[in-house]
Image (tube, rainbow, N blue to C red):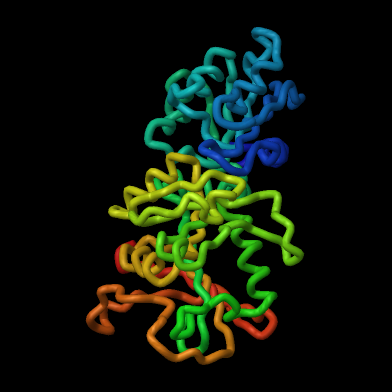
Length: 346
């Protein structure tokens, strides 16, 4: 046994549990979770995983494949700390205790306000518990769900395309082809990876975007982001977003933090903000941006149409600071990826 309370066999079993977790849905309110139940002699007794909201959690799924009493004294290896709350299903910690499980090994602690505490409940019942096994590997898989659960909002990426002078459109408002095909293909790939894509009503009214994610040949990606529209102005019933594979979500935008929390409760873990300078500036001014994607084209447009508007910054000392995470060449264009620099004390 290792000094951290788990064995090499636990780590190998955790990798199997992670493989099982990957079978679950990548999007939605609930995380991907896998569970393997092992006898005191190291034999695998049962495996389970979570198949989505309303279905059995991974631990219950695995226990359900065993005869009564067969789990007595066994070890349950699970990717996420067993939950401690009653939602659509009962607490997994209680199910493990009732089954007679003698030991629980998990990777990542449950960050939920109501679901955390399973490990403590297990220990109080006399179950041996070891946490943190392969935590980094499991964190990588659960990254977006964990971020949303810990911060009570989706991970927010703000994207814009601009010329070398920071202009996002020509003086007449035209902006469609600032960047080349390689940059546009990259944007669509990133759209497909996000749970939702956001624009403001101004962008919908001016550009009538489809807000879909498409391959360079025009075919839809299998995964499509949910379209989210911020703003109070009415959107035409025949707008392109009305034909999106997902029903649009309309948000007034009066309180971005509250709006993001509501989106997180809907199961949106990652939000791709593409909606012009007004919306981008609102997210930046509110300090709700986790990643910037700036596509820079080798053009000069001049004029007043900047990619970002007023952020309420009056002096250089108040400037919003970012760290460059990556710079990538995409055809004739550059992609700059930047993350907000932590403020003092964070």
